[in-house]
Length: 594
Image 1: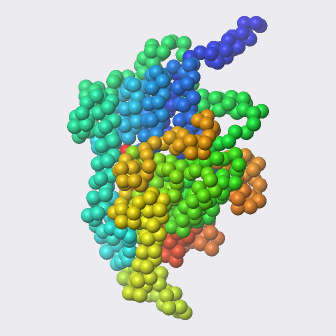
Image 2: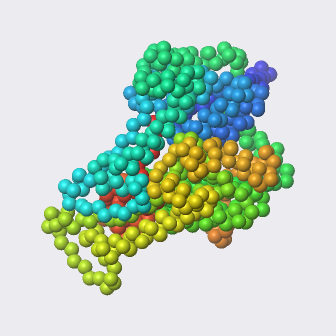
Image 3: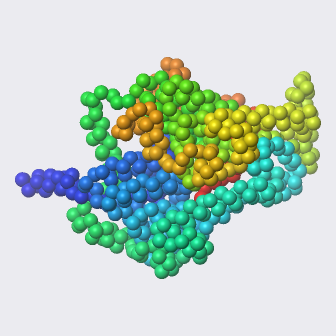
């Protein structure tokens, strides 16, 4: 009986005291933040979040029990900004004298694997399965242009933009890259490639020129990658883990980094439950396309930040005596101008109220995403963050010719001079174009004026950097659009310093609401519960008819309410013809690097 009990107890004791090898599997991707909706949270329960990993690695590098880190890379794409933040955290862990090992069954498998390999270059050792390959190919940015198709259909696009680099609608108005769009895209590609080459050069101890030659020489089979020194060894999983145990000792126990981080967090909370509440820095997420109303999530287009939710979070943080500063984590390609301006206003008010605001940019913080960032005390970006795109566009398609080909006629009764201005059945008149131009000029002037004030730049300098142009974080830092390169940890450190807090002051997700709190309605628009994300994307009852569903399906959209609010009366045409659902302050195209 004693041996039956002592066996499990002895095993449990060894688990509590044995050296640890932490594991992290990134093949299912990485979340910026865990979704609060119950179904989405369950679906993503096995995916780690960026902040959990960073917190776990920070704790582990100071924990004598933790001896090594093994990470499986590859699989679902992870954004370049998040990868760079991971690289920094892994390098800090390694700097504590603990081995870091990356392994992959394949970096791409007949596809590009630049970004997962870029992540692997931050590790002490890189292993590749003998049957795998290394898709080190360099970057290619490809766009699809529909102008020819629209001409065949008889659809005329009338688009106004401020200014020449605001290329989001060019997929509908051009047959290829315009000169300014090509120039900006080439520079983005060159900047990212420079960052990849620099990582390879540092990892291998070679020149940047030699690193560029290696990129141009790819892709590689496993043996070729080994011969080129791009990986350190070939091996299957069992061989990788045997090599790790040989380095740190055969008695080391394996533990997932997420489990380690959660257990440490629970222990910390237990120790501090009886202690007085500490002053803290709030971490507020501003993720997804920007729209008016509450935040939500569409099963197709992903998360959307609602201005009502984000501004409520900022007001609640400003009113909470325990919150001394705010880190605003921005990961957004933009969207509604009005919604962006609402969030900008609350950032300003939070600062005026005496609480510093530091922005941490993720993979993308462009157009409206830059708008909500520009008033912060300090802006951090990653070198590969896509940012800028300070500009605006709007317009409409004219489908009269297409309808005429099908024998469709329309008629209208109008009672106002411009009541039919946004109809897709006829083009803008000269007077209506003047109205659109004045509107675009107003938004551009407001946007650039606020950039000049927030970034302490002259109006002339802002116009040089704006005009709708997209920059990487590295280029934006060199031009004063962001202050420094770094991630959430760097932003939190600056926020603590500016608020006069010690380095140990906690960074807390804000607002953190329990299940019961979520069930109770907010008492006011300054209640923390007012910031809670809506349960879903939501449908406007007036738009939920059959025609609306067909238009949404054709555009690959499920959140019609956001589309209608962003584009007003021409939302159906915007859906059919692929205009960005979120609105006129939108980043052109998709900027996911592989």
